[in-house]
Length: 529
Image: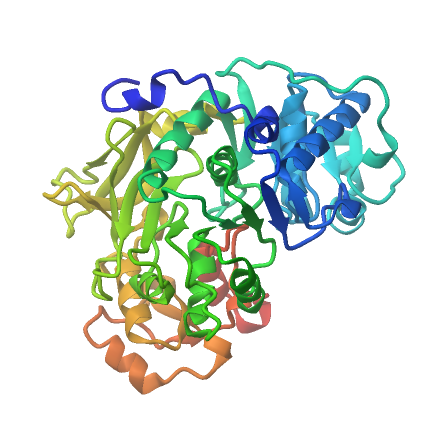
């Protein structure tokens, strides 16, 4: 890979996951990490820990895992109840040279079992709840060792019962060898297992650090609410901890809970998935000003509605708050970036996802049907970055299908403007023939109808008009007159279908599974789940 990604490569020795907390503790040992939940692996530790204490906890877990028989190069699936200790366990696994395979707690047992099978007889880190309620008994035959982070179970060893022997020292792993395996969102089926290296992760870290550094000069508290199995969490923690920024980690993103914590701890930086920000719009009206101190809102990997950006920026009382949008993918990391300020109104084009990071990432749009890509004829968006994963575990052919001379096909369609910014119009699999951009239409509706908490447009069955599925704040009835006025200049659609937000099929990062939703809508009413 050559050309415009040279700044990702210069001096890139890799981001070492296994020693992340140890290196941060060497610089800022008293720096605090505040949690909104207890750690299953150390419930006695409390919810306010120094980086030095967490470094010791990672080292202790690594020693216990080595006592369980886990060795360098072996895979260790981490599938347990939700909590920040998922990432701590990943660090501990990597510290002894093994490769953590992180599975979302939101995955059902059948899907998790299939991914365990794909990992080819890994060790399994789990808990009593997952073994009793999610995983079938057959999973024990697919693994080498089962280690419980909490509880007891026949055929498994408890992490708490392990220990003894000399402390496990960090095992050096070559920077181009597998370091971490995460999974894709699974919006179109069973998730794929994405294999990261230390070097590819460092290549992802650099553009994000470069974007943050000029915006944040002093010390700020960073609040993070992202999936604990998402690759973004690794780089977000590295940026914060290596600079000595206090970190607030949220497992629970419910608006009232988040508002209480933000009011008390006054974060200057927020990192969350787009759907979390959408649910936090109401915090802008909280008289306590939970968002008042935020200098930087950072949104991971997906485009976000202009209304949400406008509301959140308006809630900050900082002089020049910025909403930083990152467009990317689990497979390549950050590819394009865009910053919003208060000067951009509600009419800002939500389909613009930004530009490549100079010297670090490249992007292009490839024709779909022989015509030059444009707003009317969107092409395939492709990206080139050293942050790209090295394979899909067990699916190399599927991985190779996405690559053309180092360019990675993102699965999105869009176009590039004459100014050089890229516009994302739709996911390739979600295109609705003759409708135009469903995402752009959703932006319009979301901006015009304050009562909406979510809107998703999916194809109708057998050529019928597209169906808008709407969710309203507090599940209040939809104002149909206001809806018709808002949709008047959009392509023809069926009457809106009102669902509760929690009933929409979602991924671990709260993306809506559009294909699943379309199938549910086309099923007979008595077959809908």
